[in-house]
Image (cartoon, rainbow, N blue to C red; front, side):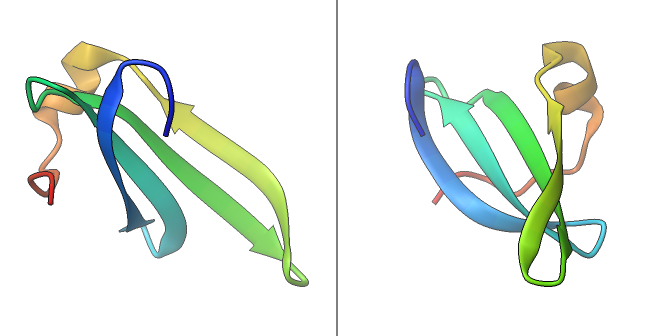
Length: 62
């Protein structure tokens, strides 16, 4: 995780591998979900809208 993200962690997003990152103040910064086909990432879905992230039931940063 780079930029203003203070923390990041692996996550499962709707059954898919993914990653979460948070700003230094603990607010969610981004959510990534990966589609894997035959052992390769074939699609990445990114959610970076602060309003949508705030409505989600996300784990607290570790």
